[in-house]
Image (tube, rainbow, N blue to C red; front, top):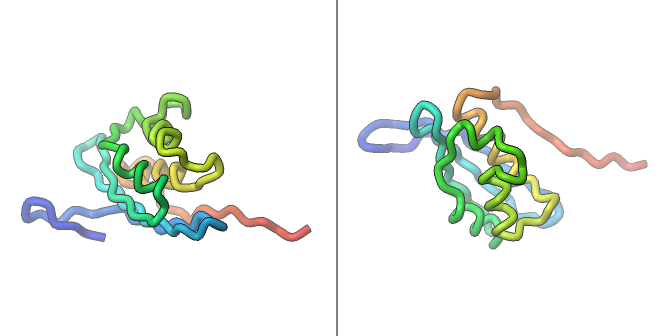
Length: 115
């Protein structure tokens, strides 16, 4: 997806995340701002994800490799009271990695199988 910025088109990594039983589908867009920074546009009807989106600023590449206890994405998720099993914070990490060229876009799934 492209977005205009100062007369220049910029590419966005775009993810649509179906988080499961809560049914609050989330749209995540990650934009590479500079060589090693990324910013996000996150849309969801979930109050916690809306708070996370407001709290989350630009991230540098180093931020993505911090442990969960110091990672800005997961700190914002905790501050916003996201459910522990919410897949949105992890999806934000994936979007950032692809936007910065650190990973390739590939579908991620969690599937419950009937026993």
